Length: 135
Image: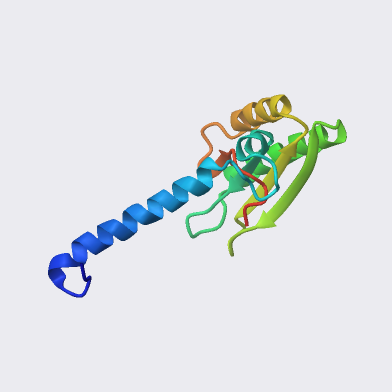
């Protein structure tokens, strides 16, 4: 079958799409993670906080919640519950990502619960369970 005719174009697109899904599924099913840890184990100990904006800078309530969460996590680092904190500026208007690597999955769950409580009902404050190696 040739993909040159309009008649066969849809079939070719479908085949390419399904092929890409198969390749993506194979990569995910291997369980590998950029850090060398299994993906599930790495993500259970790592999460990130985001302070975002809608084009007018990060709102004051979001900044305040982010600062409170940051102070909580810094205290946890001093107690040994957090292995690493990495803050990254991700936008032009003050948007920020704070990546947290907890000592173990239990500490990560507890800290995520506390941070989510700080950010409860705060717009543009997000807590996401994800690997810190994300760029």
